[in-house]
Length: 297
Image (cartoon, rainbow, N blue to C red; front, top):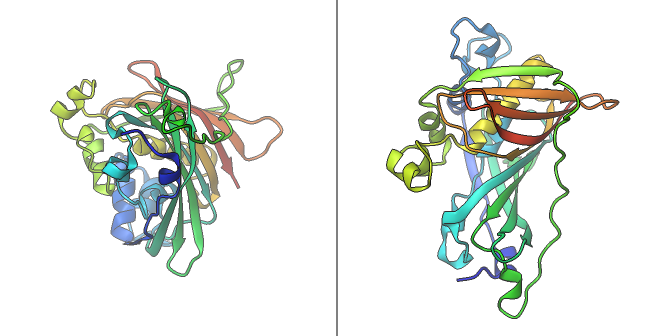
């Protein structure tokens, strides 16, 4: 069944309430590898409640809050969900996340763009995470590539196609990065990260991963997104989560648990607090996250 532009764009999402607690904030940080070095005191405010000043939440915890579930696989969407890919993630933070909070996630579809028959379509879902009282915490745009749904605008008598989001810029090719950060990804990282709410067996079962064309279960894209954000906080923000205001990234290739992630960061000339970044896997010398942009207060 081909997707129907008007039906998909008008899809209603029920608000998703969630009460995440200190334990959830710590588990999220641990799933990204914070605490791998038991002597690294800089990570303790994110994984241990006994520090002066209290527990702090990583800003990228927002991407797992108020999530509406894997709705794209529901029959009425018309989406060929087996072929979809998470293409980009863009987030704007309005304030620092508390370590314990009652929140509500409110989602809507903002863009549906037809790239043409055989070339797929692009779906953008926006999710706002607010406190129970309505105070905004973060606004996210998830860009999904619908590889099996290109050409929909020429079907059903012709349907609209939205203009895409402004394209992300590639990182500089003419100069070395200003900062480089290296993180070893734990072998069980995907099994830990799935406890954040994404239970896709692609990240756990070798047989499912093989069927999808991967040599073994892959790491969640949003886990690698969190790793890049942590690298940025460590290298450029003095570990202060409140300083991160924006982070956009493109998922260029899969990451496997057990690999080493090297994040390369460039200052944007003449623009204080703005950076471009990418990440590559050391063992394969493969760029896995690209076209990154970040803003620090």
